[in-house]
Image (cartoon, rainbow, N blue to C red; front, side, top):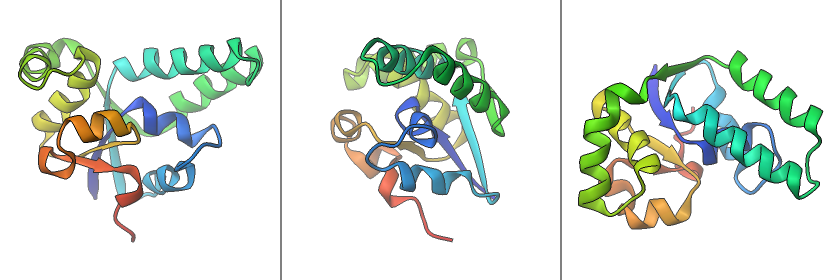
Length: 140
C-alpha cells in the first residue's frame, strides 16, 4: 500500500470535471491509502458552495458530492493533533494555516502530500518539500 495525504484541490477533482481530474482519480485505486485532516470537509464544502453560487452546481448536486465523499475510504485525522506542527510550518514557510495542516499530516505520517494547487506546490518548493504534483502520481 502506498499512502498519500490529499488536499481539497485533489479531492474535489474526484467529483467535478476539471484539469487533472483523471490524474486525481488514479489515487482512488485499491493500492493507495488516502489520508486527510478533518479540514478537508470544510474546504471541499466551500469549493462546492462557490460553484453553486456561480450556478455551476445545484444544491442537490453539491449535497450528493458531500455524501459521496464521506463514502470514500479516507483516513481522517483531527486538526487538533496537527495544530502545533501546522503552526510551525505556516510561520516558517509563510503558508496559510489551512495548507500547513495538510503538510503537518504529511510530516506526521511520513508520506507525500498530493496537491493540484500550483501556488502551494511552487511556494513550498515542490517535491523537495514532500509534495507530489497530482500529475506525478506513480502509475501502477
